[in-house]
Length: 177
Length: 294
Image (cartoon, rainbow over all chains, first blue to last red; front, top):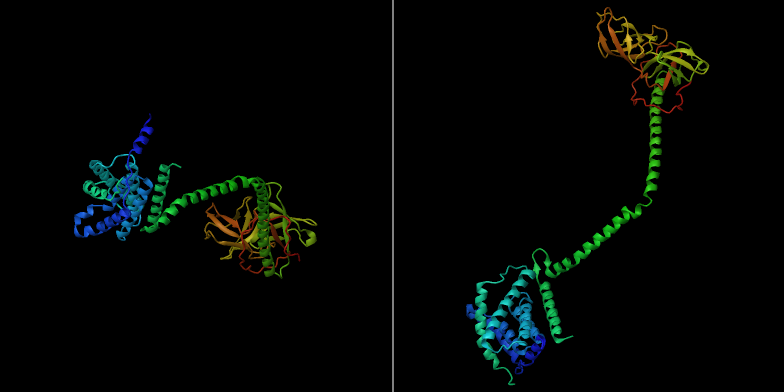
């Protein structure tokens, strides 16, 4: 057997999770609201990117690249809209589109149910998300933006840690198979 | 198309749409909206290439293909240029002749009571032994031997031979030539003669006499050939000799470029000629006509 056949076999054994009606929409809206409200109360909460965690989770769970990237697009554009005039529409939209696609694609190939896998993937997606944002700011907006800093690394680890618990909570929205 | 490829196409399309959305919103400081900057940046290379290509094609056409008839045009232009040069030379000659004839006419009008005849120089000395010229007027025009020949500028010489239709003039610069002269300022008289060279010599001026370079010399009228007060020349050099001064005079008339002259038919004194602004005489075509023929 060649590697492609093995991959198909492995893909066929990965479960595609379904969610309760409106669960994805409602949970994503809540994350956006919390993301907009929380930093006003707790400054450190600005390190969190709850919409990114939501896109990552649903992408990994649904395992459909098309729906994953469309979900990322919608969430990203909404986040852009809520971010005020200094953030143009499309900045987070592009980044979360990429993350939605990557999460869905990886989720279709790997078992992402283990907390360590979730932690690692979320940290990686956060860094990729920041890299796409930096790329967009540098090239398209001609704004100075660092590619990678320790601050970004710390934020990535924090988001990954939060994601481990948040994903457990979101697992409860799944339909029983 | 496989679903994997579909999702990739969808990803690219969604990202492209959002990039365009960004471009429409973003307004850079110096370049206006980003979409405009991108559009210009995307189109300008084609415009530049098109302009360069068109310019290359135009230059190639102009510099090569369109020059097929240039050789013939060049030859035609050369011929036309040569013809125009010749025409210009002819016109310049006629203009110079016109100036000279105008001066003669003016001089003739100021001396209207003095009989004189205008003549054209038709020949010169066949050798270096004598300095003579030939005129196209002769006995039929009233010209006789020993008549004076002048131009409005001054004395030229005298008639040494008159033939029915031509006459010969001995120039003032000939060794055998001479004219009764005097200083225009002091009136002191001394003969002036030729030396076979462009300059004249004033003779028999004692070393004690005071003679200045630049003094004007005119005819005295005592030689019975020229009336008095015709310009002979200007003193250019004065040297002390054994007994007499050696005085050189530049002739008033341009004896080396004579085209038209006047032959005096009388010894009646002339009026002082009025100054006329005339350009230097230039060689003219030989088919000119005399000014007056009394």
